[in-house]
Length: 92
Image (cartoon, rainbow, N blue to C red; front, side, top):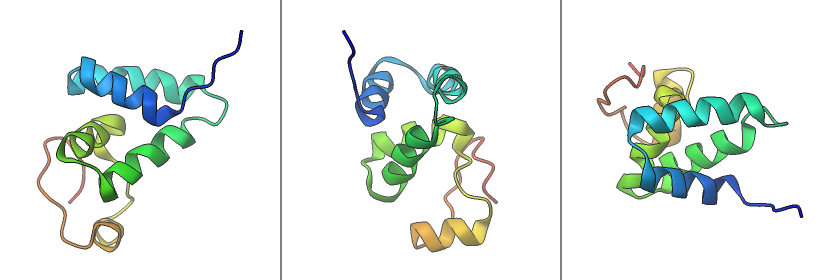
């Protein structure tokens, strides 16, 4: 039997059950274990950063240690404002 579950569903379940450090560890494994090298997972995180609830934004920032943008200007363009201070986000 073959199940297909979206990464959004998986990430929601993980977010409810894990703290940020454990979420980071599990998602790191998922990135390296998926055929798309985590592209879908990162897309979900980027969507959550743009349109998510506070809990979703927090979870998205835990994945990949919050590094979803390559520069401050990219962050500002995508998020429509200056970066917020997030522990360990790497955004400056």
